[in-house]
Image 1 (cartoon, helix red, strand yellow):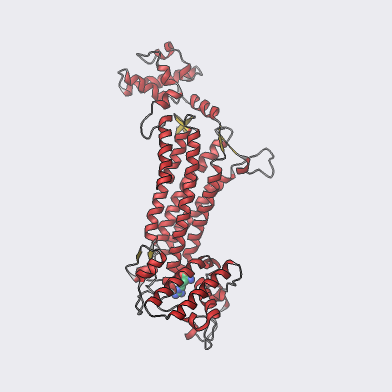
Image 2 (image 1 turned 30 degrees about the horizontal axis):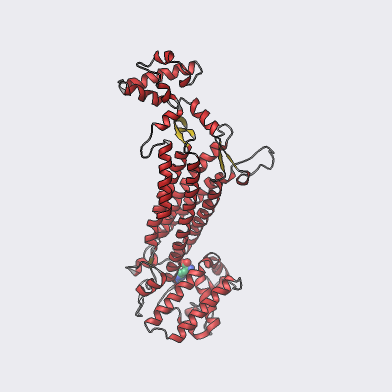
Length: 465
Ligand code: ARG
């Protein structure tokens, strides 16, 4: 930038040797942080406006800087910008290009700021946008879950505990359980956004600037809710990255749990669902195969996002105040977590509608598993038996049914009567799968009416919040 430098580095004034090539290669971050260009430019424009307002920059210089930065953004977006690793990072690449383009005025842009508060600002602007995008992607997945749930309010499947058939539930109810997980994730994401939305610019390197900085004005221009209260904290805080990666990990954990179920359900031994061909892949050796690679990859990528969380936690654990170069590494974890989430949510918003439910198979499985045994026990309790005795009686009934290779509802009243006292004909209403799910007709229950209500409330939530 300046003719008297021995090196071509913007920080090269006090240096008497060229940077070693291996050091340049080792320290550069532009190959990853170029992705922040839009936010870097937005931050610089807001900083310029603030400096002009405070009479640190005159209007002519400010105008030149702003139009220069806008022209650079156009060049970048048109693929006409050459990023130089020798200029280290996105910030110095853009600043260097600005000086090349507008000369003297460009050299005034960095007044009253440092790359330390600059990169922290860029990262927050970037992540705020990504959070908003993820928010709508999660909502899309929630919408397609509602669609499936609505189609299957009456479809009965076995519910599992310990991966053993437990009690009948409706498939719609199962879909709405997934919905609830994502709803909590949305909440977590919004909460995390509050702490992203604070402006570090003005903290400069660490101690603030000696210029009259109006950071409240910069915050207003950039849509930040508040300004950071402490300059040391502002440049070194990456809690928001950690929090985001933690939220991302929870979201991935949920998607991974869905994946696990989908993988089981498409297995012909379950045969509960089928996935459209468009959402499966084949085997290069076994011609008959149709594999659930998408959910497997989502499950696999969950590991990556957990790794991102571990990486950023570890990155921060031993950093004294204030900024340390370690922080440059935060982008690997953050970008990976963001990209992975986008990819998984996108593919799931297509995959969920591509599920075809095999209602007959599900019903058969629920019938075979003595899933209404608890309903029989509840029936006996209603006729006066203490629950523990009812439990015992039904246990004996199930053992008998197994020995006869029969379902509970296939047993005659006389057969049932050997173990269970006070039975009437209406007991069969409760041994039937439909009777069982219909009985659970209150908030949170699996009854078709409740699932309809849950879907309606869910859609209201998606429209109104
Ligand atoms: N590329 C750096 C980062 O991502 C920018 C800040 C560098 N600051 C410094 N004083 N070396 O963290």
